[in-house]
Length: 292
Image (cartoon, rainbow, N blue to C red):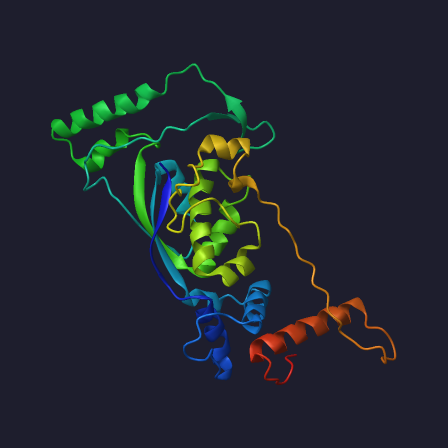
């Protein structure tokens, strides 16, 4: 089973706010554990304009269990710490991942999949044969670091994966989309659900609304009321994982009065809105000079 379990975390949305406002000697009053609308505006502004350093003060660690071919895709993401089990030292009986369905090769892409195929080839014997050869090599005295080379990519592995809020959001923004490999997406959506619970305002600002309810419980396991999301379910699109349509909220504000000599141009409206949001969010309603 592909599973991502949250092991530890540090920080909150308040941490992001305080990290941003420290430049002006400001912080959230001691004891307040919730964000105000002014705080939320600041977080949205930071995410929109890619001011990412305040998000780097929040941190999370996960224990991931997945097949090797999934791990080798996810390890590519930068700024995330990775420590994995090593079969140089561990020679216990390996487990193999078996998909619920075999997908067909995509006709219009160099990579990816589409549809379902029903191969006549018996795949179970591959794992059985690899396991037998692996055990025989170990029994004959071959070192684990060489014996492991006969194990297939479907061999299950596990690792600790830790990083900042912004680093995990970058990973999930790439791996939660429908065009990514389904098995890899199962890891990303579990992480996304947990991060949303830990940092609700920041996570929504960083990822949009596409990573909303995924049907997992708060620790990244499949909940009792939410049946496991299999790769077959993901492929057929009958689960929350593939419901990735963003619902964009359109906010309108009055930027100028009726006594103006001329209406503002579109570019002036945009600049005025950005200045107004920055001023209100950064100073939390206390006023201050607008930023050029």
